[in-house]
Length: 260
Length: 312
Image (cartoon, rainbow over all chains, first blue to last red; front, side, top):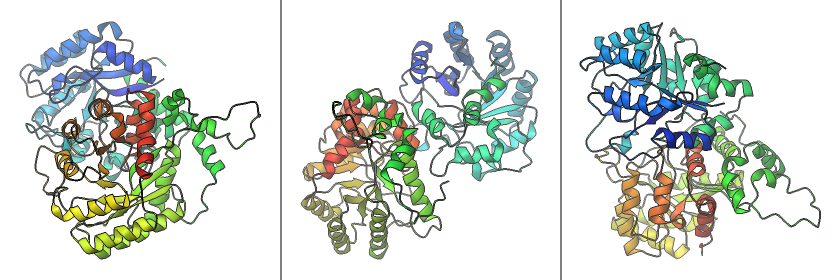
């Protein structure tokens, strides 16, 4: 069993994506042995009003809810975000959100973002935060969205110990408090592996050693990324089946409330 | 992190193959369909075979065209080099074409000569696993040419150029001409970004290589790390009409579709597999590419093997 915590549907503004419909992504997942995936709208990253993208996503996965788990994209500085949040949760049946502070022009420390974190936590929604969308070197001439600073995420995690966070598309956590052993941070966040390697410096192994196998989850970034590197790093991870199962699906299943 | 001492005995071929068995399918999944055995099958090749069984066709060699050895100013250099071999073992990579760069770019002759001596030592520590590029700063023409000639004479497989000068700068022409004379490839650092990279003001891109290739069509130019050099779609399109330039698939960027676009635009014969130390990214993107298994085998090693056979 593999659950991908970092997948997308829809169009991205700056590059054509393949396998970005429910049918084609499911075909890719079948080919790669990935059972379920958390998906959000790639289009919502650059939309001003993200809610139509959330609605389109929900419609796209409607007949595949057993495998595609939709997360909404909500901008806490856009009019009506509380209505959108309520709709994402109550009408569209979403179990979490993805936040794009860099793309939506706010900071994680802004009071508006804290309002969103509070509201999502009250609803039991997972807050999924991609530290980047694209590699900075690939960026279009139109935009310059820097990676989220780990310190901003650390502060948010500290401020909301009852919230649940998934940190996506990050790297070098072990050189920050987020990936170190023995910090005063709450254990309310999971780290996703798409950019973290299990050979050479082996950050994946270091994170498991520092935080525990319960804190690391599989994610690929598909269809932005080939899913194969993430699958490969899990395969060659120097760990037993128990640890690999936790990373591959058990941790995500527990957070998503999925039956084993 | 692998902590094996550098002077630990090298793994025997049998031990290496046994170790690699668990991950044999990593690169061999598609190759197996070409008729070549996966490493798992190779693992039993030392055992006597019944005479009635046909000899299995050997799996094509997997060659990482872009790897780096650690500079010895780094205290962990020996462990780091060993970890590279360990990663190659786990990922089914047979050979690593390595350069050893000075920490500060704009290398002095003393700096690159020292690096090349250490690279030579690494080829002896890891025989048949580490192949070495001779790294030079072409701005020091006399010393660069001397070191290239010496290194290739000692078995180095090619020349590595960084970003000291644009690939179209006449200062690098003598280096290209010597590489042509010796029949060795030039792996050249590359990138095309849609903003000025102030740390690398003279980084070359696909357009520079296309221009250089028009001047020197006999040169075996390898444009480095398409997946670590900015807009890869731009790079691939820029190289379309430069048929003598190879493209190295390495880099840390995991973007889907790079390999397919490169095969479609340039042809599989012009692609060479590499990791540039992003090991699972490098291997994973080739494994994931939706291309013909025969093309995959060429990219993984066949093309680089052919390039290396051209040494005079």
